[in-house]
Length: 446
Image (tube, rainbow, N blue to C red; front, side, top):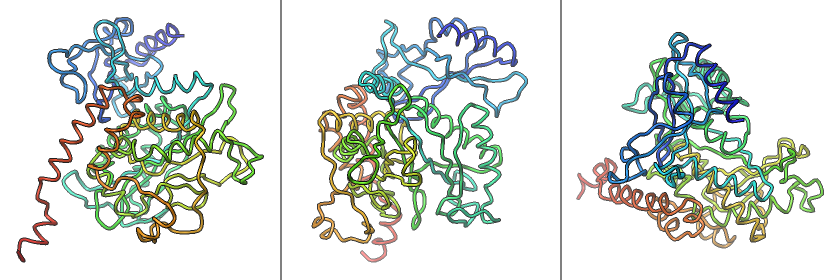
């Protein structure tokens, strides 16, 4: 199969007048990295990889151990539609190895692949369908929106309809199917939902999606941002992650029409959900990795911080969508806390790890929280109901993550240690910075 895919890449390069191929990979924080390879070197790179300086990549290797090799994955080859058709440019995602041929433990894509392999050994395939939100602004220097639209507006208020349309067409040219798109609740906020796929393919698709959104915006002279909470007083950007486990025959293992609770959930799905609820505080640093991520969570503006689940209640951390309750393929759990600034490879890996741990330990699923807006409850009322909260700032998230054996096991010591160190540095820098809010609040009166 690998040789067939390699042949396809080389034939496409010749037939489509491709002159450069970009090798894509991410650093530990999920920022896209790449270097361009001449097509004369691609065939050799498919066999032997291409060397690069890993010390220049956030979270990879120190200077004295800097040599890394990027091995392109031929099944990820695509032509970049925003580049000219003449002298075209392709791309492939890469696996990172050390010079001795071993997989590099700091490669986020490898972390997810390992978790998918662990699930596969138990007979499971993780399928994911994310809802990825973002803002359009006039430029990168401020938050001036392009419109004042709200949910599902399709009028002159939604001035970005053509931008979304072009983005979707570009994604489809790259083999990424889209379910639908719409204007989100905040001014100039938008959402494009990708058709579900296996976890590794979807992580590649999310990275491609973010690149395409920004490329199309730049082409039209505007700026797109996936910052979790760029504006006060309105909702931030989320990345709700719909997920389920299938078997190798395409059967949804989360679905059970005989569920005594009436939610069509199998026991396996309930244990998986219990694992997500138990370990969410520990994996929150990965799904919500920046200081700004907690401005979204702590604002209680449509961002679920409450560790509970429901079917209809959108204020809970987990939700079971009931659009098509009797259709087995549609049965899934929606995790609502992640934001689009997360590294999708690591985010999907830690959620899968939490779910599998719930299955392994047969964790019981608590009763759902229906019929009440959790945002309206005081802390005392939440305590009375036994509803706990996600960490409300980066410092608390770091402490929980650092102590988590599951996160250390899932991510490996290299990435786990880097995230603790890097995020403590970020938190300390934030705490020592005097904000404009503090100056406005205190300077004139103290």
